[in-house]
Amino acid sequence: MEHSRLDSLRLIRSAQIGPITYRQLIARFGSATAALAAIPDLAARGGGRPPRLAEPALILREVERTQSLGATYVFIGEPDYPALLAEMETAPPALIYSGDLSLAKRRCVGMVGARNASAAACRFARMLGQGLAAEGVTVVSGLARGIDTAAHQGSIDGGTIGVIASGIDIAYPPENEALQEQVAQRGLLLAEQPPGTQPLARHFPSRNRIIAGLSVGTVVVEAAPKSGSLITARLAGEAGRDVMAVPGSPLDPRAQGCNQLIREGAILVQSVADILEAIGPIHGSMFRQPSDPFTAAPPADASDSDRRRIVDLLGPVPVPVDELIRQSGIAPALVQTVLLELELAGRAERHAGGRVSLRE
Image (cartoon, rainbow, N blue to C red; front, side, top):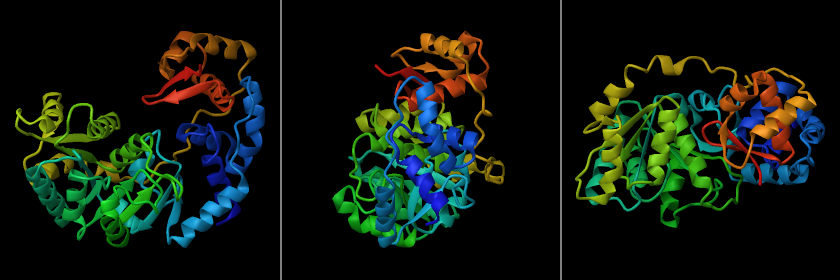
């Protein structure tokens, strides 16, 4: 791997460097190499110590392990990076994959649902997966038990993408090890985490955003209230993608989440034709040429008074960045600069929905 990509991976794996911070650093400094050199000064301006940067030796070991598994990296901004996913503000700066990356260039539909799904729901999910794949649509899911497994089984012969919350060498759940290998060989397997990473609870919401980001729409087949499937549906809606749901009996708790989504405006799905009708009208607009993901605010140097004003407006409760801009009266580029400095200094933390807070 060339030096510039190694530096990109080192920046990604460094403490306090999330997807948004990564984009802003590249937009401001032009390269990961320049950003790594600038981080100590930025953190000092933010009133803290520089974040712990990933050791080059660890990055080299990760790359060697990834290559030994037959897997490959793709970085945001590269031509092969999935264009729809890149449009999400929190898109992973790098993905590790095995299989056919071109499957992500086709129309993709996410399919998620209950792990303890009913037999009828699993059968329906397999049918949907098979029907979508037959129409040239790639089915994206998370290789979990239940609906995810059924969706992959139905679409494995025509085009499926499995997004996992672990390293690409870790199968979870263990009983899906053979299925995960099939997806890697006959479809596309994607992981954001380095090899060897166990599937910790905090990684699953991150996995869900990738499913939503890859897809023009997401179908939910059985989901209890407050389940991870509903998180995926919410992320899809926030990204401007279609949210679809299969209705179920009001007597079955596993159907409550889907029925609630439909009440809130999700598209009711009873067949493959319903999904194709929903995604058909937006087909053309969703496949324009990839845009430059590094479109953060241009470089701007904030004054000490600007920093004090923004810090005074922040607290432990996350607040939208737009609200900080309104209340401070400071130019958006300067607000973003201060937030970047505070984050690198370990004093600020970013949250979903474009919100930020001070660390306690």
